[in-house]
Amino acid sequence: MSVGKEFTKGLYAENPVFKQALGLCPTLAVSNSVRNAVGMGLAMTFVLVLSNIIVSLIRRFVPRKIRIPIYIVVIATFVTIVDLVMAGFAPDLHKALGIFVPLIVVNCIILGRAEAFAGRNSVFRSLLDGLGMGFGFSLALFVLAFIREILGDGRLYGFPLLGPGFEPMLIMILPPGAFLTIGLLMGLMNWLDKRRCS
Amino acid sequence: MKDVLRMAWILGVVTVLAAAVLGAVNHVAKPRIEEQRRLALEQALLSALPKADPRAIVPVYEGDEIVYYKGYAQPDTTGLVGYAFVARGAGYSSEIETLVGVDTTGQIIGLKILREVETPGLGTKIEEVRYGEKDPWFQRQFIGKRARQLAVDKDGGEIVSVTGATISSRAVTNSIRKGLEELEKRLGGFSKTAQQVSD
Image 1 (spheres, helix red, strand yellow):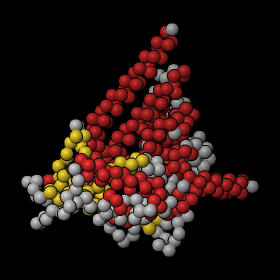
Image 2: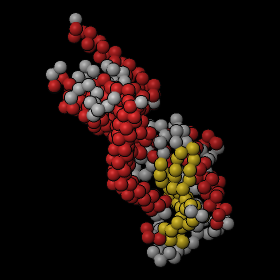
Image 3: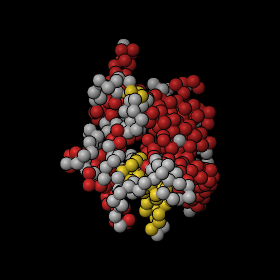
């Protein structure tokens, strides 16, 4: 696979949310406003890139039998760094994301990439893979949040957009709204892919 | 056996390294985190006791715990303008903490929600500031009220709850009422007339 593809595959062809259907729990929870989505996307990308780099660096020293606990330690370390730095330097964002920052530890996208990619590929390719997957996840969150915040709250990035005459569709910012939006977008993507093939 | 020892050694090294990195980051971030907490509380105290001098809001301890704050009009702590306390109540998905300021007669003069992790778009509307307004409409309702007036509309009270977030609204309202009643007990009753403050 070409080096450029290692990056771009995460954006669409292997998008973690829409194509691999990984990490859906935080996706459902924090894609209710664009502000949360962007913050979560950046935090995830940071952890994903660094954990991919470290996992790839140490892949030759790590015995197969204990690779998973070692990956978890590496991932948990970076997540804790993000959590501490956010609490100290971006308290509002930290407050808004709440429990979902510590929960990045158990986000299966990160462990999935460590196991399926970074543990078997060079540092440079793992970095690109982490960046691509991170951006792909952020992109998916952003698209979902964009749709849900406008329909469910009449706002965009916290600013009133549709005016006081608009009656927000509450269901869109609650979890069912996320399920509906993800389902419809996945369906749309499958339809587009099918049409392009034939 | 040799294999087990080798794995234990590698896992040990990895965890020690991780702990060292985290220790370093914590060392840098901790003072900042405490500073942010202090700033948030300080700002909340100022909005809860708007007439108090920023240098003359003093905590009152019971054991090691701060049970309430006294606010004075002058920096030399004369001219008591009121009290502030933190009210805590279980909301829908979090414990909601509100800092409440009252005057010497027990009438609410200011409040600020310190912490809540309620449902975004529903429960979080207890902090919503409507377009073109300066302060959150839900919290504004409490200003000028006393303990006995504090109940949400569904419970027959005067506080209009947030649509779709009765539990969050009720948590804030009831925790403030309880806090006020506790404060009254601690003080042995509020004064009947407001103290005259010349400023």
